Image (cartoon, rainbow, N blue to C red):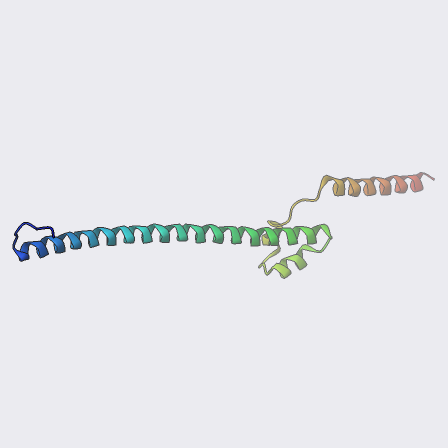
Length: 122
């Protein structure tokens, strides 16, 4: 059986409890720091998802308005469907027509003018 040096029983308990208190404080502060870091990371992830959600809904609204405009739906109807207060708000969503649509419109006007001039001369 090992023999221990003779010490007062009181000193052994005091040293052990002091070490234990210090150990508990450092462990608690480490756990607290870990929890704070995890909570901050969770907050960052939530903010990123919220921004992504806003971007997705904005893109969907913008796409719907532009598609309706390409289908030649009146901007007033698009404005009302989107819940805007005026058409000027809706116009921010509408992309300009592709050059093919503009070329087709110009071709129709030129053909109409040529036919009108041809009838006037004949």
